[in-house]
Image (cartoon, rainbow, N blue to C red; front, side, top):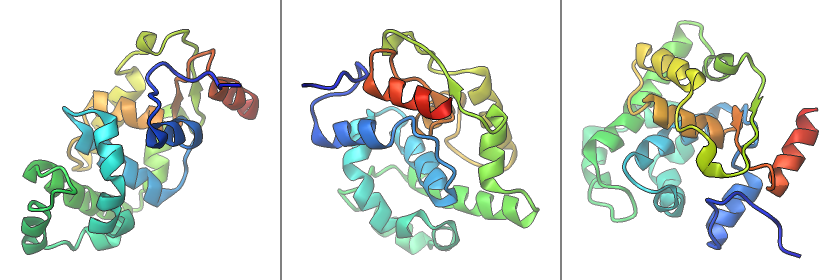
Length: 192
């Protein structure tokens, strides 16, 4: 029996695994939240499947998104990364990853926890929404506007409200699985 999934999912095995195992699952892991914020920024102007197909290459190039290591990437290394066909060769986007690692570390040096700043936007509890068609879900929200503002204030780049909304959906802050999707039922049960 075929599982019913959100309408944006294709038959691509990577997309299926991403939808079924990751998208919309509440994440509280600092490194993964940082990775997803960076990858959502890489998506700007592109499709998510493009980034998803390159995710392993990004993980290799950016030290598994360990902020302390990413923050130290040199201009020389950036030059080499911009030559890599495995990555999206956009200097602003590549530099944004390094900038965001530095912003995260600066924020934490001031006593603010990255995970807390991300989750406080939804009062530390996922927002569960109900749509019969994924196209009904908004591309931005008051919560993504708030997160965008908070991150920009702290020096993050490529964190506009639309990118932040996609990020919040991906990391389970906003759960937008369609009501007929098997993940909607699973998530609804797990959140009580």
